[in-house]
Image (cartoon, rainbow, N blue to C red; front, side, top):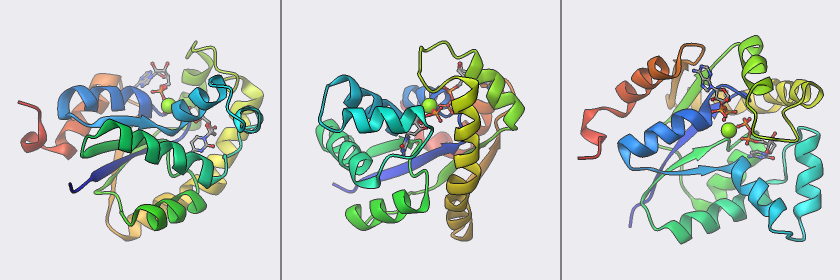
Amino acid sequence: MVIKYVISYGGPGSGKGTQCANIVQHFGYTHLSAGDLLRAEIKSGSENGTMIQNMIKEGKIVPSEVTIKLLQRAMQEDGNDKFLIDGFPRNEENRAAFEKVTGMEPAFVLFFDCPEEEMEKRLLSRNQGREDDNIETIRKRFKVFLESSLPVINHYDAKGKVRKIDAARPIEEVFESVKAIFGPKNEKS
Ligand SMILES: Nc1ncnc2c1ncn2[C@@H]1O[C@H](COP(=O)(O)OP(=O)(O)O)[C@@H](O)[C@H]1O
Ligand SMILES: Nc1ccn([C@H]2C[C@H](O)[C@@H](COP(=O)(O)OP(=O)(O)O)O2)c(=O)n1
Ligand SMILES: [Mg+2]
């Protein structure tokens, strides 16, 4: 089976998870959120749980080997051939390690581009009880995004793989742009 993946990329609160849920409905991809997988790992009481929890609270990026194992396990268990990987890769180390381990590159990268003020507003009203949605951790996450995550987009941009979307608009309008990128031929019948 030939497996294909698309990356959902953007700053914290840009709307990655929201748009991924729509894409799943419309285009039949399996959504894999690296953040959700890491939070599930904390809850499961695994030996890495405390380390992951501390890093997330500090807005830091968990070592690649941990996140990649969770992604690979989820991909194998699911059995779909189309994956939407959300919130990963978040730094160059994530990207290079995943490509090395899987031998695969993404079909394309959706880049949800959104100003910090808007992302901050959304995160502060997200109400999912997340330990990292407080102003102190949010500021740290923005810094990590600029310093560590933006280089990833530059890498994919040089390969012509980035599809940039203005994510500051209402959810439905953003999804119209997303649909135009996936194209009618990929819609579920
Ligand atoms: N286009 C949008 N306009 C307004 N609010 C949005 C939009 N997209 C998402 N949201 C809201 O903002 C918050 C963060 O969205 P989410 O999808 O969790 O972002 P991310 O996964 O990028 O952190 C959620 O409460 C969500 O409902
Ligand atoms: N590739 C990843 C993805 C997330 N994490 C950690 C660090 C991030 O701040 C948290 C939360 O990620 P998540 O994608 O759920 O956050 P947002 O949807 O962008 O708000 O998880 C990570 O260490 N490595
Ligand atoms: Mg998210």
